[in-house]
Image (cartoon, rainbow, N blue to C red; front, side):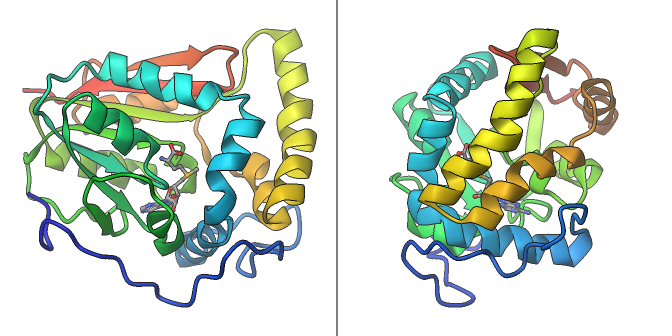
Length: 258
Ligand SMILES: C[S@@+](CC[C@H](N)C(=O)[O-])C[C@H]1O[C@@H](n2cnc3c(N)ncnc32)[C@H](O)[C@@H]1O
């Protein structure tokens, strides 16, 4: 289904160290700067290579374990039958892959970062690739999951077109990313927690620059109506958007038009 080969062992494009608490070199120093184009691809890859060894730990702590619940909700709404072929895009350390395998799916994980793939805890085959150019034939999969990666991509419309290309008619997609609560009190609290506390936790346990970048990277995410319009335009006409409690995550679900 996915070329090249059923199991493509990723090769590091440069040495990936064990846990280190240095700043990711490719991330911008100035708070106002957000990289674009190839500079963004390089920055994202080197950032995830750097934080990979402690990614799961920091993730569980900073979301209070809610990320596990959000992925389960995404799986439930994806609503695919056992035996379905699913691509988990930006698979990271394999959280979605494990959930999908437990549900009986035939899953392949795809990620840009060798460090994340090397730290993945999953039996699923893994492919190192840019998810804007998927090594999969048209209409070859029943479903796609993608967790917390939309804001890391250089171009969202191309990604949605790529999803429409590889997912068969009637196939389903579930895309998760960070969100912003609509309730004013929760929004205020979330702003302080995500903007100030998360960088401190991430900086203490992992790479300070990466976790300073995290709240800033939300600026790349279009507002929900725009995301929906893009997905619908790409060929997921029934796409829906849901903010997941307490509003710190958002879920996009869609069915590939027939
Ligand atoms: C925040 S992590 C999420 C990992 C996992 N999906 C999860 O739910 O925990 C984002 C992942 O997206 C990957 N990523 C970012 N841009 C990518 C791209 N263009 N192609 C493939 N993977 C990408 C990163 O390497 C990283 O593993």
